[in-house]
Length: 162
Ligand code: FES
Image 1 (cartoon, rainbow, N blue to C red):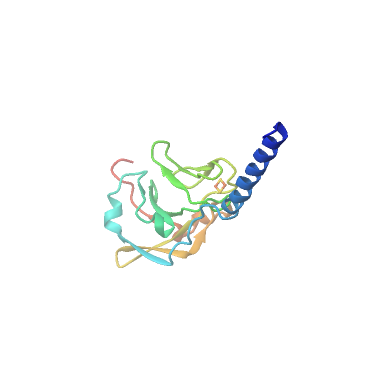
Image 2 (tube, protein in one colour):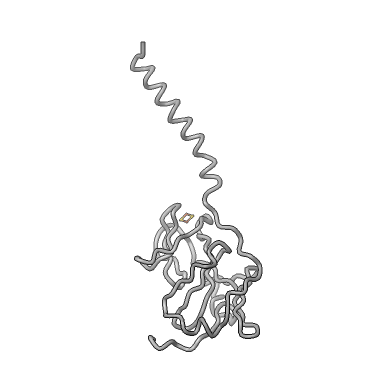
């Protein structure tokens, strides 16, 4: 016969078990893989035609997004600056959103909501023989004033929309 105390202990035990099983999930959240070292993302001429505010998600599995900002092209890390979870692009809200604790980043990578303490990192971008190359070995951090570095962005002429 199950008493009230027995039900309580069973619930407590099950709750504890679920809690213990959940610990590995907390210790190893949905973290982003490190960006590949060198990635050729295509011809510069093609990106010059891309609309402002476009987020190219083709390279997400390689650890970055390519974003067309008014002043040029940046490669934003897909790793949340809170605890490193893999972010998602939310086209409707125009934000990079973190599924772990709710941080949100704007199109430029600036942290706008949630616990993320700093902007997304930008990966080095250069142009070689007319092709845009993203280099995951070199990162630029906005809060350190590094986004002004010439290799944190490929400068583009404003598109017809701007
Ligand atoms: S890891 Fe992104 S908000 Fe915590």
